Image 1 (cartoon, one colour):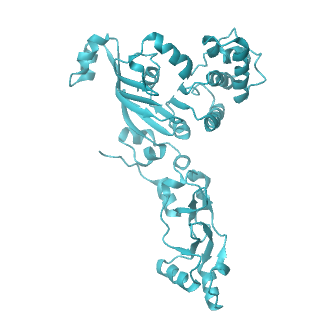
Image 2 (cartoon, helix red, strand yellow; image 1 turned 180 degrees about the vertical axis):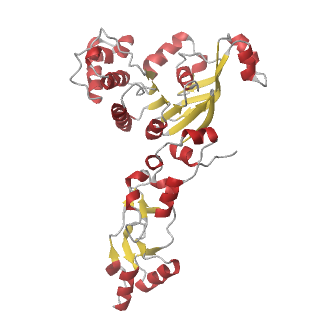
Image 3 (cartoon, helix red, strand yellow; image 1 turned 60 degrees about the vertical axis):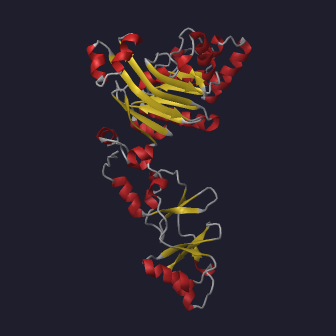
Length: 395
């Protein structure tokens, strides 16, 4: 949906003056000496349809400048930009207007509500700019307000709403236009922590239903980890790392990223998939208790998953149950099976199941939607992931 290549922005110099400086080996120094500021330096990335792509970094990292270049509120000094196949970097102003009105919408940090207009009128404002008929745009605004839980506040005015409610109006205004792409510039940073978390949850709920393409700027790593499908970390106008939250936690690109993630709650970011291991042994339903017990003895385990032909878990057979069946002359595993295990999905955060590790004779099972065994999450792997020292990925 979005493809940016070598986006660069120099402030304080005209393009014709800046471009030759960008060809020099010490481009940062050359631009600074000439009185300019290289805010964004050759940033490249792509965003897939329906993805929440997070751009994060500290103040001055260039993240908001990159966001504003996507709809050319900030003109790139250099680089190319394509949105849904269209060359946005080459568009004239009269071509940009339909793009901004219909394809892309923006949600700001400080709400940007019009104080003299009602909440319904604020939610409908993007459609007013499009010259949508009054009745249609107000109906659409009411629909959007209902989506964000403000259906009873349409006749109120911004000064009557709390900060969280105002941001919901900003989100409703974006939804009302039915834009395919939302650009969100630190939209929740001015909110109290509890309200901020509620807004993050609302955004995720709306995204699950609508699957819009979202580019979200934040300086809060925990927020980025919670909502982002992928995260692009920036420093001094450049991309330091672009990866999933799990990949950034597991393999930070450099010391800067390592320091950035030092205080992240790993248990809420890492998932069952990140500690997934192949089971040491499993058993098939048609094996004998004696065969399975011998296999357990070889790996010094006291429980084993019994699977059917499609790899679904039928149950767990413990060493005690297998030994009893052997003594009693049982030839089938049916009498040995018990439900003494816990199964989770690959995307479940570790915090949701780590307390269950070690409570059963087998590790926590990781299964797909059809309950087929994908692997196990051993207690040692969980503890290792949560206590892992910082690892810096070297090229």
